[in-house]
Length: 327
Ligand SMILES: NC(=O)C1=CN([C@@H]2O[C@H](COP(=O)(O)OP(=O)(O)OC[C@H]3O[C@@H](n4cnc5c(N)ncnc54)[C@H](O)[C@@H]3O)[C@@H](O)[C@H]2O)C=CC1
Ligand SMILES: CC(=O)C(=O)O
Image (cartoon, rainbow, N blue to C red; front, side, top):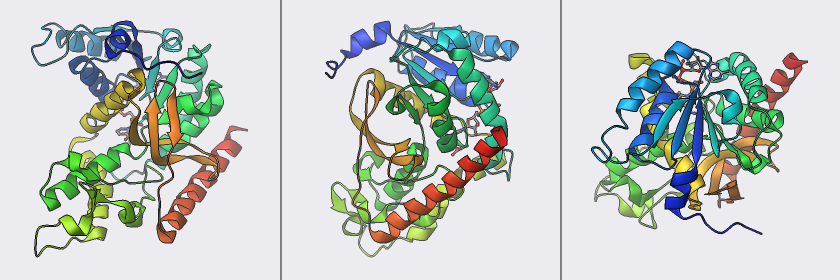
């Protein structure tokens, strides 16, 4: 039987979140979890103990004045991989990041090795642990983490195209002149370079429940291809200028943690195992305390559906190559 939804106050006072990787992304996630508390304790886990401890000390200062900038009452501390395996949520941001011009999939060899050893170090897992992959290439690492961890597939998920979707919604909101919360639009499939403009599910975009074209200011038109490219290229532009992206994924990972711990049943595009495509990629799901409650089937047109299948085929090729190189 399904557990009853958790009272948010009870969830906050009892829950623990571990973050593997105390780099730019891990520390941004931790800060968001301090400013908008959803758990009583946040553990930072990183073999680079000097960096980990410095991040803990810096983040501790953000917990001091409860309510000054929101939140408060969260304890941040260093933790071990073993402790992480007993937490309610483990967010994995451990791994190499892209250099300017490098693709996400170029990180696969390095980050798969890190994922394998980190997952083994966390065992045995609590049977209630939900793992959220953030490190890249996120869809492929989600697939392998399901294998390495042995946890039920719905409990091992990836941030996937949630960040791309947020970027898309922001751009569309500006074009239409509405708040982004009124835009319902999704980037689907792989969080990666194969994300072509058509991977935006254009046929399902609505604003205030109305088709996009009906909501444009009079006399305006939108260039769908340009918007999709702007969405896709945003990460590369940020990386070129400042070396990494961190705040967007920090805020969105914290939002995913909240959806899970509070059993919010919010619909998000999240990377998860999709049986009929044979890999992990992003489609909208309902998120709850055990991770994926249900995957939703979008009414895509044939072109969009074909692209999703192509995205899955590209991922499966990379998975097969990675599997061969492991043997
Ligand atoms: N999915 C998404 O939308 C996004 C994903 N990313 C990805 O997140 C990852 C991390 O990026 P940054 O934080 O900028 O990199 P970073 O280099 O600042 O931090 C990575 C940290 O992982 C640590 N680490 C290495 N092995 C570990 C292990 N076994 N256990 C725990 N920690 C370990 C390193 O010591 C380092 O401190 C990258 O793969 C990056 O591509 C970044 C932004 C968005
Ligand atoms: C780095 C990355 O995956 C992003 O910002 O989209």
